[in-house]
Amino acid sequence: MRRAVLTAAIVACVLGLAACNDDTTGSSSPGKTGNAPAAGGSGDTGKPITGVDPCTLLKPADVPELSKDDYMKPTTLNTGDDPTCAGYDFSVKIDSDVSPDVHDMEFTGSEVKPLPDMGGHKAVMSEHDLGGLKSCVVTIEVVASQLVEVTVTHREDPPKTCDIAQKAATVVVGRLPQ
Figure 1 (cartoon, helix red, strand yellow):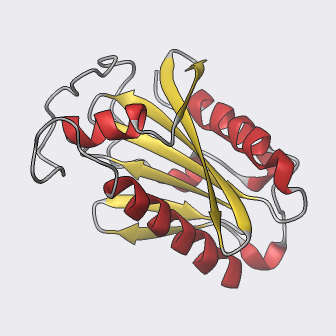
Figure 2 (spheres, one colour; figure 1 turned 180 degrees about the horizontal axis):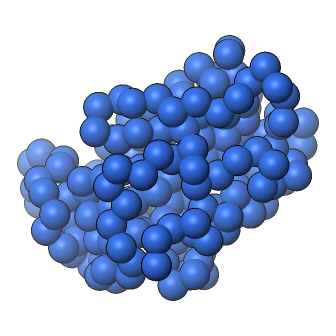
Figure 3 (cartoon, rainbow, N blue to C red; figure 1 turned 90 degrees about the vertical axis):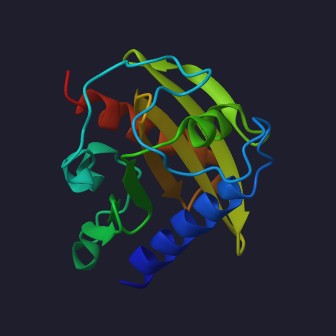
């Protein structure tokens, strides 16, 4: 249970850090404004996933490096409009109403590294160090106004954290509606 709370806390901190990035579009209050297409976004690359339980997109058994402890089953946390599945060392968050400013910040911010498209979906990665734990976030564009964030915090082998996050993100992309 502690690990789920820690993973959820890391996700909240990562989102908080992302919100603190400079907004270069000139908007004074980036945030959710509806389903307008994202400026600079790649457009609609899939079907919207509103109402999907994020725990159906990734299970610990899908990625051998993720913890499979029975006492720490993944749980869906409904934090507002954006459900998050928190496991022992991973989380999957569906951000279902992303404004163009936030989309642009997620994909062009100074802390993100572009990844090759995953199953036709635009993807980026960012690394974070929080309390001595390395976490890696892979953000996947579902449609211009919806993103999925896969976060992995791997205590046993920190140098492989981002490799594990990319494996997990690949599984998630494979489960997105076509």
